[in-house]
Image (cartoon, rainbow over all chains, first blue to last red; front, side):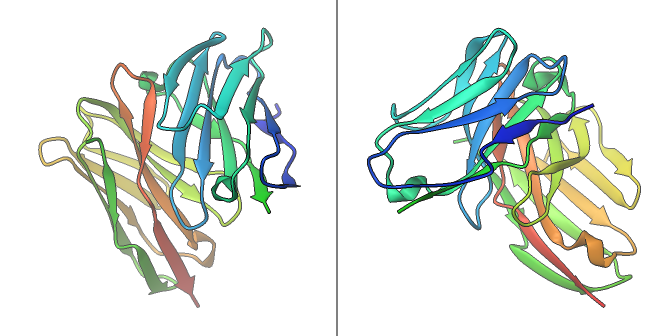
Length: 115
Length: 112
């Protein structure tokens, strides 16, 4: 079975541009969450979606938005990119909710560089 | 404020030696505590998951402990291998919020 897949793996954008990152969860998983990991730091929670509804949001500005599609795949959108948005963006999927104690599976991430 | 703090920030050990990584959290109430291994530039991989009622969980050479009273967890690695070189991240789930709080990780380097 395929794991969590993310695309693109690497991309470079200029300040002010918009970016869309994509994630496909493990088959059967209905929960997807997004994280930002700046170099040298631990991941920071951005969003969690379960059954196509937003279930949690971290402390990120409104420039960050996400959605989950009927097939449970998800997109993370970031508008008006800033240099500080440069990071590894991780997507994770889980069977059930985060509080269930089930394993959370992470994708390999999308490296975003803003110049 | 919900926080997860890990120590040491970095650690160097020789192959074959044991080591222990620490995680202190102020998250309350919490559902579970997880330890992840993250190789540089890769996504984190799950090592252990513990609920508040569990106080130890093993996965091969990795053993995690949890003291819910003192809000401390540790990850013990026995007979370290070169492939153990990675960042180890402690993650706590906040009950009823579906939110994960990550520690900043401990960077472990194992030398031959």
